Image 1 (cartoon, one colour):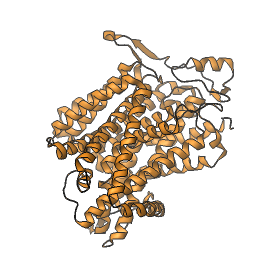
Image 2 (cartoon, one colour; image 1 turned 90 degrees about the vertical axis):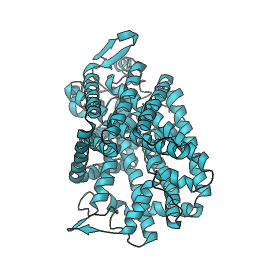
Image 3 (cartoon, helix red, strand yellow; image 1 turned 180 degrees about the horizontal axis):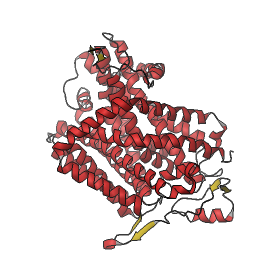
Image 4 (cartoon, helix red, strand yellow; image 1 turned 120 degrees about the vertical axis):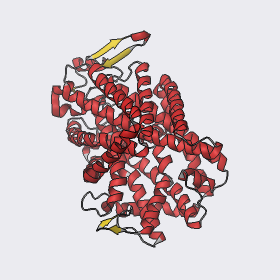
Length: 550
């Protein structure tokens, strides 16, 4: 049952919500007696104020701390387990991840062209909280960040080389990693296919996943007056039961998915930053260095947390964007400029041409590519979706659904195409001309083949670290909101706790199995959460249909 936001009792209840503004203008609040934070436990242990949802926080924190302790204590024993888990889930469930991601993209695109796109998040008279520049910066820094730095050079080169090598079989099964049918011996064809496969992983599909979660959270919080937690999305399905154990389990799943998705990114970022520090300053490329780096960056992230969203996350995000586009412009200007300029449109066309085949979930012959690359990516994006979605929701109040979806789907996707085209083309060009020299991190090897290597490599290291900080900061903000019963202004010591936990998980996974452990953690938490998001698609449509449209 819903009420107009101008009803006095509804308005009074909404204004009492912790940190969530009331809708401005017409909007249909859900009529529930639940008050944000009513099930929370408030205390001041050792002088620190806490305001926690006891069941969600208690179960989440205990399970995660237990996981960290076991993984650290039994490093040799857990590594084979992580490998087996990753292999089993990707080989058996890849079709499910691919199918689900297609559904999220199709729903997002469909909503843009329907009258439901006129609904304004926060009420029909709501105005945006951030400028376009600030909004785009936070969208991009939270959503891709470390991934673009880590895979920007290496992934296009990997797909190019695999495609150029063509198809290889053993006992009737393909053993190569080429996307689709490859392009054996055809350099131009291998470049086109390699770039299309890369853009596929960084284009519409990841942003479609983020858009679904962000839209659902913004709608049910800013328009319906519910807490800013994943459980609120399921009110149209579960009703008042969403405040009980069904809702607790949804939020706990969201915490696990977010923590392990973040830990994967932080682990990759630490590995890349360590490689860069080794290339530039000769610092040993060891686990000890990575652990110390994660610890140091976690401390910096804690400082950013204390500054808050406006002063902390937004400023760091804008710094990130500035540095990222400075590095991007440098690569375009001094790299293979013509190849990049023509490649942008060719790669975009190649991506759209190959999109149906690349996104096909059934009957795939390129099992290594679709399972080892695509299924991992989709699980990674889905694991990130509570974190990125909630963060995008928080900074997108005042936008119409149509404006929101166009911005979240298209703008970052086009930037990803430009980024991958520029960095990937520079790496592939060096590979083809024989100037790509080295087996270390592909980004720093590529930069070594361009002028001003020391300066650009230093900027790249700073970028990785700042992306690391913004991800940790934003992630702890979101997890804290979930474990505080939907409050968005809970005491800062709780966010600091989760920042420390994120770093601890990243360290545990790196020491307990490296990249395989990171991948296994993402797949394992992404699988059940995919089911949650599929159900959320129905709730979005139902929720939007009840909203007034300007």
